[in-house]
Image 1 (cartoon, helix red, strand yellow):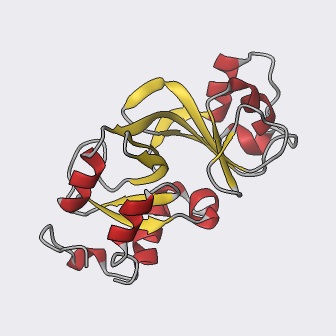
Image 2: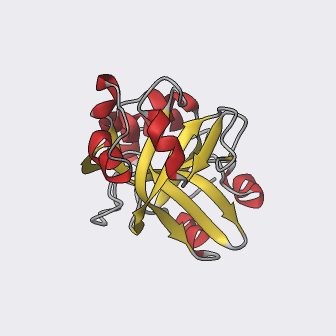
Length: 196
C-alpha cells in the first residue's frame, strides 16, 4: 500500500491534483465507486470533480444549449458529459490539458487547467481547442475539516492524479484504474483499515 502511507504528508500539503477513490464500502447513491479529481484543498475546504459518472447528456446536446451555431466535429459530438458532483449541477466545469490563450482557465498543474467559462466549449468541439478535456456539470465540495474527517473514516483512498487516467482511460474503467494505481486489491480492504 505504498501510495497510502504518505497520507499525513498529503494532508499537510493539501490534496490538490490527487484523486479520491471511493472505498467499496461506500454505498452512497451518488458517490458509490466514484473517482474525484481534487481541484482545490486547503483550510477553507475542498472542491473536486467526479471524473467517472456519466450524465445523460452528450457534448452535442450541451453545446447546442450554449451556442446553437457552434460547429462540432463528428468525433466530438458524442463525447460524454460527466455528472461532476451534486453541487451546482447547472454549472459546467471543464478540466483540460494546458493550452495558452485561455485567460479564464486556471492552471491546477503545469499540465492541467480548469475553467467554468463557456467560451472554451465552442472550440473543444473542433481542432482549435485543447486536445484533451473532460466536461462536467456540477462539482463535489467539502467544508473545512469535512474531507479530512471522511479520510479518517476511510471513506476515500487517495492517489496522485495523472493525465493518462484523467483523459485517456474510459469512464467505466477509471475506478478500477485508480485502484490499480494504489497497488492493492481493493476488495480485500475493509472499513477498519488505517492509513499507515
